[in-house]
Length: 109
Image 1 (cartoon, rainbow, N blue to C red):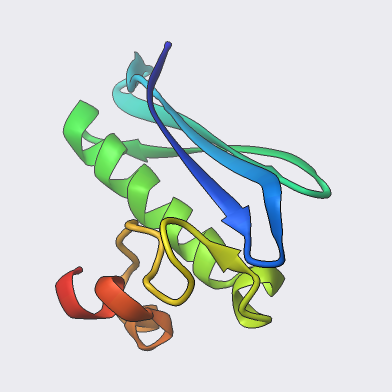
Image 2 (image 1 turned 180 degrees about the horizontal axis):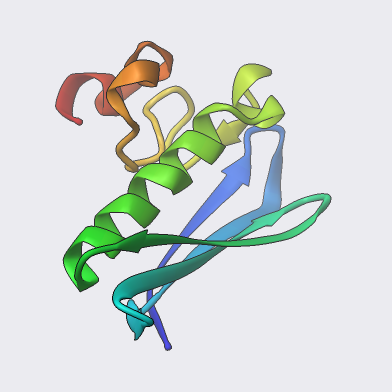
């Protein structure tokens, strides 16, 4: 079941949509998994993150989403946006790549 969706888009294409969907964490063999999808222009990417409980799996999924967004070619070229260009995407990242954060993400996450 999808529990959250955020629609990103391309800066130069107002009609473009890059949906990010997070699914409810589920227990699986002594751990929890939280699946998510990113609907990149080149195709759907589906991954999951794990954790000791549902909250940790969800937190890890959010950080992995942030990592994938901030390490993408679309971010590097400045084409990826959420609400407004240059303000960030609203997903946290691991400490080691915090230097990639922009806008509100750099200020608040």
